[in-house]
Structures are given as structure tokens and as C-alpha cells.
Length: 408
Image (cartoon, rainbow, N blue to C red):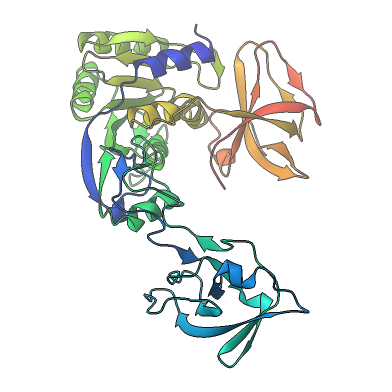
């Protein structure tokens, strides 16, 4: 049985990043992975401009200004943002300027309005500024034709604004990964079916579909597959043909696991693992295929499913998406507000909520029965506390490593 770290490395090493690029409208680019480096032929700022409301002056004119001996300048023009200056600032002159306004010829410094006193078309400068104060120089933020945005980054709101700034309305992005989702088991019904004794509603289709979407991939919900060898083989083959990853969940017996393995091998898969030393989530089957597609047989209990998604599959989707910033889950130090228990035999993850109090993360265990089948108390989880192998208890007030997951 593999350790959690061994399993993670084995999975990540097998994931081959997608190389296919497509173009989308800027409005659809959020959360996508940039497919090409972005350049601009323009400097940013485009021109020298003012960072404050005030007066554009020659520094040498006002270098000796002080409240007891103010420097008096003639105001020759008003320059709001978007206006092209029409006059040159000469000695003993200045231009009234507003934030974002283009610097007029002849001026090199901004005196903010709080340090002036306006009287008609004359202004008193009461304090000497520093040379070039509050002037945003052309090209200070970005030099034309340098690399502006790098391929492989996730497009977040700041990147959206940068793309808009350079008028990149048709954005090259990596093709979104396709993830097929299968639920197996004769006992499963869809939420719209009538629930009868012995049946269970298939919630994992919705859990996995939303998780896949949340991580920038496209879910292909392929429904419920009964415990039938031929139907399962056909469903997995169909899923492998359509998708990059296949996620399959279902409550099956040990004998059925052998049966799934047989199907995967028949379809050309190589079994990488079938068990991981993690709790919850021990029975994890991973198979790779010659075309780099990967099958994940995930345990059916909803908490087990979610822990496997957070611990392994989130990073796998990120790497598949060609996100150059993909990484293994990060753990941070926290203080537990409960006694945390484990049998010490497997790396154990307990779910709950983390919040920062007095600058320190505090972890509180989810209320109710802590069972891998308890979907109810998984709600609003934003952290997993990790109990290492060999540790049976972490007491209230002690330090514990946590993995942040959903933002609440």
C-alpha cells in the first residue's frame, strides 16, 4: 500500500499537460489557463501622467517654496484625464492637472493641491516637492514588447484587466480538460427518481461535477452504470474516448474491484495503484492508458470522495490544464479547538472549519458524527486537519497541520 506522498507523486508524474490552444472572447477568459505569452507594442503608462490632483510645474521653479515664502505661479491650462495638453509650461508657469492627466511639455513635477493655495489664475506653492514627485513615467510599469503575461498562468481578475488594457479581446487559452464522471452500482438512483427501500440517491455525480467545474475543467456526467461487466466495460471505453480523465465512484465489493481491474486491463490500462494509506479514501484505483488518459476509481463514500479530490485530483487537474503554478497541497500550522483522534495506522484527514483569530489559524472539527458517509457535516468545510501515521491524538490547544480547501 502506497503512502500519501508516494501516491501523489505517482499520479502527478503520469499527468501530461495539454498542449492544445483555443481562442475565447475576453469575457470568457476568467479562470482559464493562458495558452501563449502576451506582448504589447505599447509602453505603460502610455505617456507621462499625474498620479494626483494638483499642478504640473518645473521643479526648479518651486525648489525653495515654503509657507513663509511661497512661490507664485501662473496657471495657464487645465488638464483633466483624457485631455491632450495644448500649452508648454515655461518659467513661473504651471498647469492645473487631475489624476491620470497627461503631463504637459515643460513640466517635470506635480505639486499636490493640498500644498497650494489658488487665487484667480495664480497659485501659491507652499511646500517644495521632490523632483518628479507624483509623476508616473511613460513605460514605468511595462516596456513595449517585453513579455507581459506568461503562458501557463491562471487568468484571474488582475490578468483580465491587463488583457483589457492591451485590448486583447481574443485570448489564447489552453483547452479545458474534459473529465468523464461515472457512478456505478445497482443501488443508485438519480435525484429525480422515486426513492425506495434499498436505493441510494447518486449525490457523487453532483459533487464531482461541481468540483471539476470549480477547478476549470469541463465535467461530462455520464450517469449511473449498473453492476454489469459488459455495461461497465462499454461505459469506461466510451468515457476514455471522450475525456482526458475518467472519475468513477461506487460502492463495490472486493471481488468487484478485481472485476474493474480486469476491465481496465482489457481496455489497455496499466494499474498504478489500488490502495493508499489515507483515511478516508483508502481504496483508490488509478490506471493509465497509452494515450495518456487516466482512470481514477474513487471510493463512493462522499467524504472519501471529497478528500481524494482535494488531496490528489485538484493538483492533477491543474497540471493537466498546463497550469505552470500547479503544486502539491500546501499545509499550514494551526491550533486545534478539539481533541483529534486517529488509530495511527494511516495518514488521517479530519474535516472542519479554519479561521484566523489573533493572527493564528484555529481549526474546529465539523459537528456531528465524523464518518466518511456523513455528507451532511461536510457542508461549509474549508479545511482538513492532518494526523500523521503513528499519531493517535492531538489534544485541544495543540498545533496541527491543516490544508485549506473551499473558501466559505
